[in-house]
Length: 112
Image (tube, rainbow, N blue to C red; front, side, top):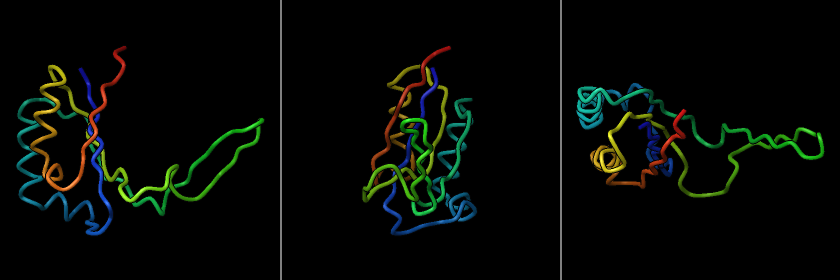
């Protein structure tokens, strides 16, 4: 079953993709997940001040700068994993380097 890990952050210590890829803890986690054959996709997201939110109301497209919600923590990156079950997804999320700093939301995909 596929699960999305939504990794949160508060932006206090922004790191570039290259800086994150060079962190031994992240590299170790990635090697472990890939060894299990579980990684399907993953990416770092730009900060919320670069977000645009789109809504359609009464046929009009409404655009607003910024994220859809005002919050201190925001989704900083995502990982799409193939796991045997939710327990497996929880186990992998618990070993993610950011799990000790911020929450990681796990959400299952609808199966096709």
